[in-house]
Length: 301
Image (tube, rainbow, N blue to C red; front, side, top):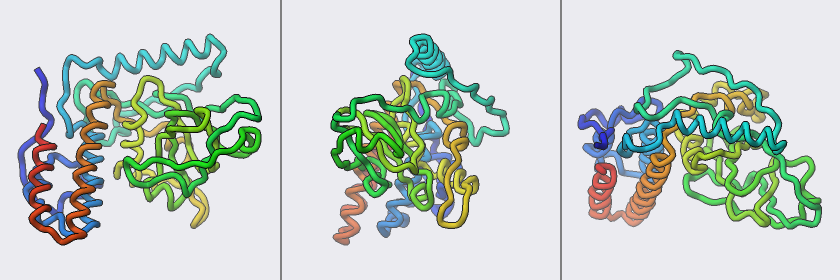
């Protein structure tokens, strides 16, 4: 039997704030017409959707899914295999998360983890100098959820030094201000030759048995960004997110099957948000009410 994470309460629409635990989706839906008045309010809706997703409140949990604890065991075994095969170095010990470090409660079959635990940090590529690869400077990395990177095609020998390495399906986070605050993060896909390099202002993780899209969903959510801003170091205009924050912040890990469901649901809802923005541009309030009904249906499972 599946359990539904949605609760049915209403409240003041002004209380729908990405910095506050979004207890339910009905807060948003009850006051939909009042909230969705401008493109800025649609952006607020997008942030709310991301926060619901990373807290396990957007799709149903299925007790038949492989629990996140077992997923972490598979990841640990894969890392051990890679070390034994000489493909990676032995990983540094992962610091223990204390109860006070955990920002909110999770569903029973989820598990608090860390990005350093679920993947390989800042991996390096090994390829011939004449191999064609992708080069991605910061302006080509998107801030919007669901947007894809563009890239330049160059020879690997020209871009392998003094740049950040990444490969197909790796995840990158912009660490410098204001790019971090703006939500610049991405899954690297459709890379020429399957590999690339780019701006040095990136943290990179190569996921193991974890959906890259779910990681980006987390990196773009208000909780991760707003918690990270006070931890940035450096001078004004050149502040950066420390590696430790990227690598060791509490990461809410769902079962892999639920990760896929969450990504699909968020994609669906973001598509509805796109249509909402278009209707606001044309001033068609009837369409806004229609899309509100569609959104309610999408979020009601």
